Image (cartoon, rainbow, N blue to C red):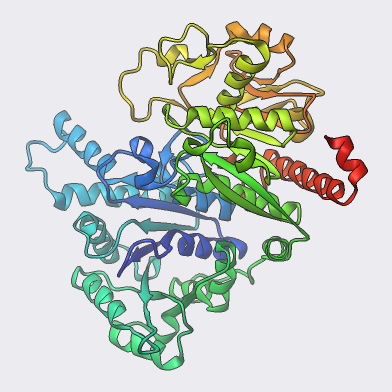
Length: 550
């Protein structure tokens, strides 16, 4: 029977519950336990698929096509296992299920209430993954902070489970903040005390308190927190700021978080964590041999979380290449034909990011043109690939009105068009082409060299596709459709053979990159950017080489 760990948060949001949950899961997994993580989000949206990235960061897509919270990306990157629809639950989904059951008459005329009907559905979802027999431990992260009205039903559900399950089968980890007052040069524990008090007033008593802090916690402070918050002193864990999120598992291991969990949950028979690969990755990440700059062209660059998976994929690929990848966010709205060389001239590579809507499109097209004409390594993802197709159609083939019907519904040269099955869709949530689909790769192409395979599976999230009515024109002009869906003929990958590195894909490779398995497209893109940087450096030192490059 599975055991359950709940991770709650107090004092403030964005403390890193997802990273703490993923780090604990990694340590337990490294000991040989079968672990998975799920996220409970207190908002009423059914899923984050319709949320603006400025509101919620990126929308992470699972293998089975679920649009989920970005924390599921952290779970997959740390554990190197797939998550699914069952790993992300929202209040909207909970209420939708209960209301549908009420409409069906499932409650036999009873008054439907938050307690017991909503909390019963929450508990059912909390226990669901543990009933399949696939996992030893289920870690559930509760979104929001203790005291939020939206979170109360989830806290109540945990309270009930604390009463229903054996004591050793359930453990609560509470993440709080220990602020440091610079004027007083003092760490303050009162916010944590109030947070735990509020949690306790709702009937949930934490077993472990993880304290985010900028300064080290001394023994007196730990003892004070333990005494006032009713936990064992070894249950007070220091979580200092880390140089990278991938360092957090080792910090938690030093604090013996995994040992405390094993002891309190009476789990025995497992050895020390096997983290040699993780440490080797960290060593490469912290001590790179070279440095490159990649331009990330997008429309949500003000918010780092909007492109979280892309940024983490560069971390993985950089470590693989023993290279520090500095990502320079560039807002596509501010790129014009007359300033594109100034803005992109110092880059070693260019990635045009996914997105929706017409804002900033011409800037993305100008950036693609610059990369294509100058030999700058280029990588386009989803909308980025579509922009490469539009630019090539306009500039090389001579289709002056080449566009996407997403931005110009009336265009007569729709080189990018809405997918046929999407044309009858009227609702927004969960209706795109979502989840994993197969792709056949043409032998002898760049994509084939990168993947080392002729058949792959990748995750998608889009409504628009390359218009195959123009495919013959494009291939005659030199653009290669190196990857296609075997069933529909949908173009999944495009590339330019006469360019040092120019590739675009309709799918989202960033969603499958992990610490243990960096995505090959990112690995080869970083390698190409390194080579570009080396060649430019050599040319700068040798005037003869410089004249040859020009």
